[in-house]
Length: 418
Image (cartoon, rainbow, N blue to C red; front, side, top):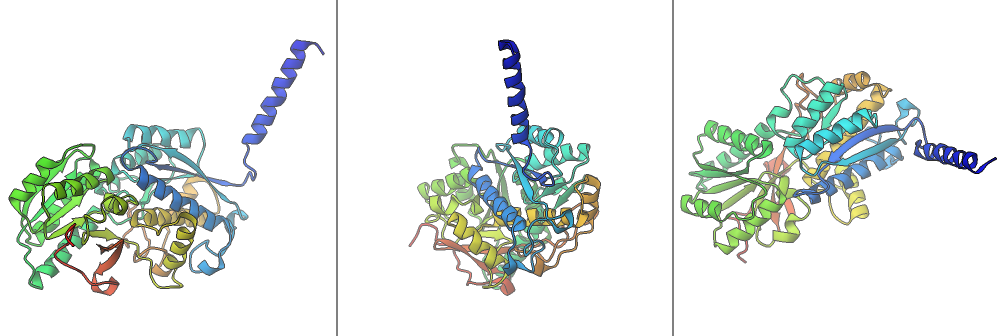
C-alpha cells in the first residue's frame, strides 16, 4: 500500500471510529432538547434549572422505590419504550430570543430531539415555541409565565406552570384579605422589567387590582439591563405606596434592594413575582436587605415522606441547597413531559402530542404544589396554582393562604432594620 492509500485508509478508519463514538450507547435512548439561560443576566437561575432537570432525568432513568407515587419514579427508564433512557440535549439561549430561536431550530432539525423543554425567559419561549410549532414538535414550557405564550392557537405548545393572571389574582386576594384585617392598603405600585415577562405580569396585576378595587399609584417599567435605578426608587419614595410589587429578573432586583438601602427607602410591603426573588443568588447577595419580602411560589419542601420532601432531600444532597420555585417548576415540567412520552410508547411527535393532551395527573403524583396537571385546548395547565412565601432569616416560609402556611406572616417588612 502506497503512502497516499495508507493515509486514505487511516482517515477512513478515523471517520468510522468517530461515527461510532457519536452513536448513543443505547440506540433506543430518547433525546429531549432543553434550552436555558446558562449565561447572561439570569445565568444562576438557568444553572439551577439545569441542576433540577439533570436530577429529574436521573430519577426517571434509575429506579427510586421511595418515589412510588411519582410517575416513572419507581421504575428505571421508560417502561413503555422497553426501559429506554432519556438523554438531555442542551443549549444556552443566553436570555436572547434570537439565540433561543436558533438553538431550538438546531435541536429539532439537526439533532432530531423528540420534544423540547424550556425556557425561563418568556421572550425566548414565545419565539422558541413558534419554531417548534412550525416543525411539528411538542414543546413543554416549564416556567415562562407571559399570558400570550399559550392562547395563540398553537397545537404543539404545552405549559405546566401557573401564568400571569393566576399570580395577579393571588396578589389581589392576599392584599384584599390584609385590608379586611385592618392593614392599610390604600395604594400599590408595580415595578416591572419591560420584556414580555414583566409587561405581561404587570398588566395582569393592574387588571386584578382594578377588579379588587385596589388603587394603583403607578406602573413603572424599566430595562432589566439597567445599571441605575435611582430614578425609579425616588419616584416610589415620592408616591409612598403601601405595597410595591416587583416583576424583575436577578441582577436588576439585587440592584433595586441595594439602591433602596442607599436611598433609605423601604415600603411596608414588598411582593416579588418569583424570577429574581427565587434565584439562588438572591438571598446570598441581598437577603439581609430583603427581610420580610414576600414572594410567590408553587414549591414547598413539605412533610417528611412526601414527593416534594424526598426530591428536595435528593437535590440538597447532590447540589448543597434546597430546590427553589423556579427549579422545582422545571423539574415538574420535565416529569410531565417524560410521563407523556412513556404513555405515548413512542418518540413520534404526534403520539407525544396526543399523550400530552390526555395528561391528567393528580396532586399526589406531583412534586410541586399544583392541584394537578391537565391541559386545556390552548395547552395551558388548568390545575396550576401558587401560594405566597416570606423571607424570614435565610429561607422562605409559606405564609398564604392559611391552609398552605407553615409560618406566620410578619409585617411590616424589616428590610435591613434589625
